[in-house]
Image 1 (tube, rainbow, N blue to C red):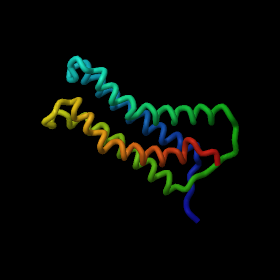
Image 2 (cartoon, rainbow, N blue to C red):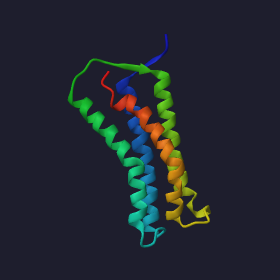
Image 3 (cartoon, rainbow, N blue to C red):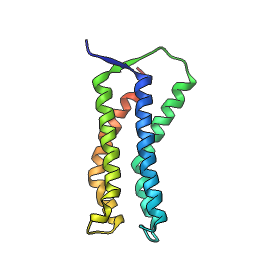
Length: 140
């Protein structure tokens, strides 16, 4: 029999990871904006950032709020699925952070680099979204 973890515990841990990771990235974006890194195009930079983390955070927070509003019997999920989802999420957030930190090394403008980053972030975001769906949108 495989090890299992409580769904509520898994949701809480994933929410902490996402809120913490997105918070760090948000602070870096804010710092870069205040420092003038994006010049007069800060709106475009934030336009890149928002769809990178906000949809996932919205799903996570909505599911937690929904779960808190109703009482249900305890459910479990296979621990391997939880760990895979946690590590995929952590990897994705690190890649988003690295995208911002690597901008000064690129031979293109920061906004061009951010736009190019969608080539690797898009597929990763899709995988993470599928994995997170197990914990935040399933009813069983």
